[in-house]
Image 1 (cartoon, rainbow, N blue to C red):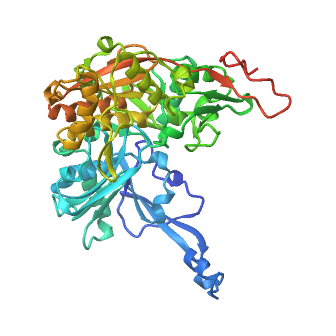
Image 2 (tube, rainbow, N blue to C red):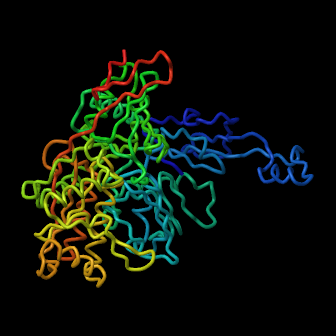
Image 3 (spheres, rainbow, N blue to C red):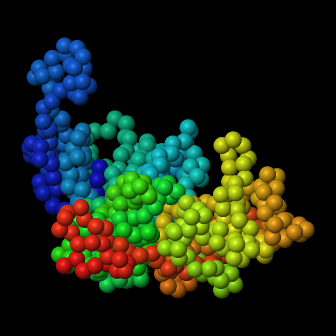
Length: 550
């Protein structure tokens, strides 16, 4: 069953399907059953029979083997709301923009037994991570599922109900599925009332308080059009609240440059996704164009081959927008509403982290110069080598510890004489920042291993000859992040990156290490307009500025 939004009407306006829809007459006098629709799809043979007919005489076209897909939607009123109870393929017929998001998840969280959880479905929030479905072999506690509640949002939850008269098992996401043995459908109205009574409770806060922290907006939510409109204003105004980052993890070693395709206005080549160059391309886009949809981003190798699938610019935008008193964040093309208390908590954790930017005074991250440096295939690798030579730091980038044939670890990127382990990444790549956090956590956890200590001692001896390897209490992991956004990292980092770093702080601090942040100033690369293949096209710009598209 699905809870419909308050503006939904109890008629066929809730149905979106193009299939045959028939309104059924009622056999009961139950006034709360407002409408029942039968949805009949096209008649066709099963796909397996059609495939079989290619290798055997199965007569798949015989009408007797064809059957329509059938579904139904029953609209039931309870209090001042409407609930759609679906049968068969009926759930496909509902207009998704009218569905109340998270309804089934909240009901389930309110009624599920804390020690009888069966499965969860989660998704990472900091990038376009894959969905992950986890099922326990036997019912257990939520902690048994190893969900990082600050880094993942819960999409689905299932298990056994505390009140077996309500249901034996419950499973909820946007929809709610309940198992009630020998349930007579004639009592559906009273069951819907009991479901809504559970929905309005806040019992979930005892075991699932994090559900309110991060709420994704469905792609059909009417609010998205308004948020996108605000975002376009920020983009065209060159707002510092916006950053750009690849939505999918891909092989950074093969990445040479990005190209922003603007239709007839041409393609623009960028060495990185720093805000300045991307904003300059947006500024040159025709006013009638939508930069979120009409600019496509290509991640390419040196020989112009794609290293990731093509995304609209919206998928690359990281932004924060306030609307109607609520905070919304965009990441990997998805909008999220963030609970203000959760935001304050994360900001407080980040503010407590030591900032060693001034103490380290790391060299400038010059994108063009690093890109031209032949000493390493990546900009990050060239930067680490340059810093190691200039500052006399130990270089551990790509200098791996091998525990077994397929078990290896990079301790950090740079090691300072003050026992600071620098993990270095550019803020223009969200998946890489996830790797940055994971690198620090995994390194801290492996500290006591003999092979780890041997590799650390080897490099430590190069910068502090004769001195013993530092104890973990004297060591400090520094997350060194290159960004062209002004201000301290505690203020300029995108919120979901802060969530990851807050998690890192918690994990590493448990192991007795210090944690610090360091900002690396960035000089963005040039924006070059590529020459069109058309003979009439003018030559590309040579000064790095975006040419006037008109």
